[in-house]
Image 1 (cartoon, helix red, strand yellow):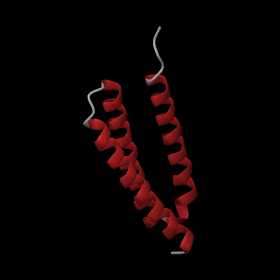
Image 2 (image 1 turned 45 degrees about the vertical axis):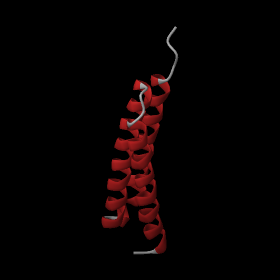
Image 3 (image 1 turned 30 degrees about the horizontal axis):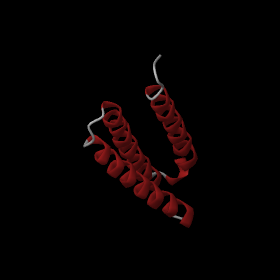
Image 4 (image 1 turned 135 degrees about the vertical axis):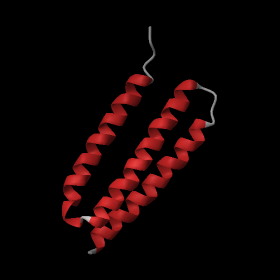
Amino acid sequence: MNGKIILLVVMCAVAGISFLAAGFYMLFQKDKMIKNSGYISNILGAITLVIGMLIGLFPQMAALLALFYMFVLIFAFVVLYFMFIKKK
């Protein structure tokens, strides 16, 4: 395993744990929108950790896994964007 793959796995682990920590913090808030954001953050954290493990196990597929993860992040951003639009 080369240094780039190790760095990707470590960064995925750090990002996944950060998403999970932020998600659990948001789940204890009273506002319903913030709680929903907490669920999305927890899902992203779990996906990030899984992607990091998959990159570690299959380093030859790192580019494909990173592309899939970018689509997941775009989808999560779109969901959060439409969730927080003020309804008239």
